[in-house]
Every structure is written in structure tokens, then in C-alpha cells.
Length: 431
Image (cartoon, rainbow, N blue to C red; front, side, top):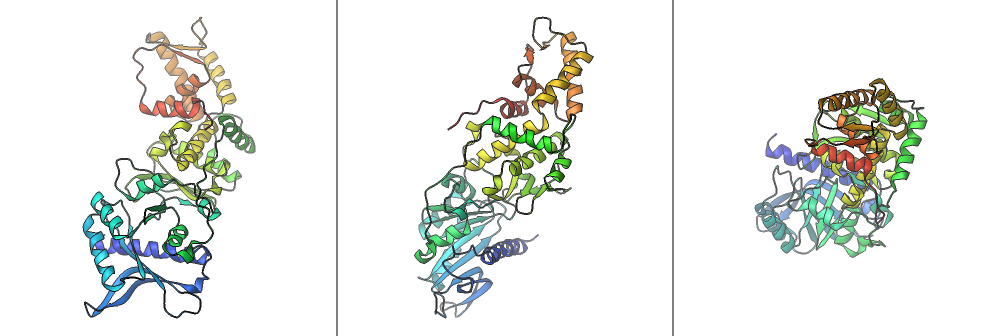
């Protein structure tokens, strides 16, 4: 795809996003009826210096009641750049805007990646707005209820080049020292008449105790009359009237990060993208079911999961409100796929089958001696096959339930083990 085609793709997607917002009555916070706001793509305006028309990618024109000419223009310049956006593009747009709209327009850069530090400084000094748009990103809805829960620092990481990246929002914006996670709030900031009566005080995602998450997972298992073995996640989706879809394609966000799966709450759809790991695919499905079961649709219209989300293994690791939602979904998935009582029952059966006995060292004991290590590996294999989860997940479940005395001196668990350990065994503290 050449640069022109890439640019047009971003323009088309962002233009449609604005049209959809307008159609749903969300574009200007109800301050204007739809007829007072016009949206254009590839709109031309006359430039006296060039004595010719100059084309802009996407334009919003706002009309006061009874006026035939716009009293405010919002001009969007779309840059679908594969790397971080350099300073040159921001300078060029600012200059072009100044030649045609000296006073009545707000210039906004729409980008598909983050801005370099030089570009960020120019945008701030020139008073340009910045929007990062990702049609595959997650879409929040809490802003419609007047109190935002997306922290400024989270949105800032979306827009400007930083060492730490986060999962992508569908819409992120910056203007005049403020950050926004919805188009309505952003547009409202551009003109006093568009601001409406909005409470700017932040709210937070509520804390949810581990027992409440476990209880929610158990209720779902009861709906499908779960009696043991690998949890039938497809049956659960069907019972909950969730359309579970699989794709052989890899999907990436605007930063190039693979998207493992996504949930669309209004349509009740879970989409799972290409995975190379069956256990991770099952965990991803459980994670998305968790979002539905824990009623996260009150905060999100859509959600995507990237691998980094699976690493949020403790409540204290959830630095942002959105990450708290991911932690809750991870904890739900762990308890859905390995329910405590069934796991304990099946462990007892396999332990008896393998003639594993407590010789004063604990219910399950393992050290570096071949006689102990070999039979322990056999137990892991049986349970892993029965529940269709990884051996690492089985080991962490053992530790959480106090069933394992692990005395191996050369036991170097992979980082994945730490992830499951945190998900299953961490003690959650209320903030």
C-alpha cells in the first residue's frame, strides 16, 4: 500500500467515525442539532496567497442557529505514518492552516502513531490539537455519563512517544493542555458553546474482591451444568447469547501490537484472532467472557486484548482504570477454567491413581530426585490434559490451594508462571 492509499484509509475511517458519532447524536454534546454541524471529506477552501483552492482531509463546520456561514471550523489533517510522526508534518500543517484560517479555525492532526518529541513541542506551541485514531482500538462509553474515568496519563501515552506503551484506545486527543478520550469532550473543549454542562471530576473503576469474581465465574459454570473436565467455553458463549467468532488472520493495533481477541458489547460478539497457543486462546476467550459477566459494558463499548493485558496479574499492578478492568477479567478467566472444587477432586483421583502418598512432606511433594520428579510430572500431565490448560497453570493452582511442597533447587519457572501465580493466588487489597 503506497503512502497515498494509507492516508486515504485513515481519512475514510476517521470521517466515518465522525459521521457515526453525529448519527447517534453524540458529536457536540447535544449543544447543536445535527443540521448545525456539517462534516466534509476532501473539502477545498480558497487561499489568497496561492490564488487557488487548498484541500483539507476532513472538516467540521459549526453553524449557530439562524446563521448561513460557519462560525467555527475544525480542520483535520490525517497522517497515517508507520513510525512516530516527525516534526516536519506538524509544521507544514500549521503553516497551511495559517494561510487560510487565521482566526476562526482549530487545526487538529489525526495520526495513527505517536508523535516524536519535536513534533509534540511544535503541536503544543502552535496550539494544534492532536488525535490518535485506531479503528481497532477499544471504545469507551463512560464519558457519556458526564464523569471521565480515563486518566490523563493513560491518554498521553497514546499520543506522544514514551518509553512505556499501553493498549490502544479508539480515540485519544490533546488540546490546549488537556487530554480527552471521547470526540464529544474534545469538540466541547474547542468552543465554549459546545462545552455543555459536564462534570470534569474523575471517577474510578470500582474495586471488586476476589471472592466476588470467583462467585461470578461459578455462576456461569452453573448455567452450563459444568461437571468437570475442560470447560466448554463455546457452550458458555452460546448460553450467554454471545456470538463467538474465530479468525485465521492476525490483527494488530496502530502501534503494531498483536490483538489476541476483542469483544463488542452491544453486538454481544467475541472475536478471537489467530493464536499459536491453544492454552492462551482458551484463556483469551475466558478473559472476554469475564468482561461480559462482570458487566464491564457499562464502561466500554468495545474491548481488545493484547498480550500485555495478560501480564496484569495483581490488583496493585493495575496502574490505570482500564488495567483494573483487565485484571478483573484475567482473574475471572483463571477461576472459570480451573474451578477450585473440581480441580481438587480431580487431583485427588489422579493422585490415588498414581499412588502418590503423603509421607510427611505434604499432600504433593516434589524435589530433584528422579523418583519424586517423574511421578510429579505424570500428575501434571494428567491434569493438564484433563482441563486443557498448561502445566504451569496447574502448578500455580497447586500452590494457591496449599497442595504443593516444591523443594526443587533447580526449579526456574518461566515468566508465564509468575503471571498465573499472580492471577490465581494474589491477595487483593482494597484501595
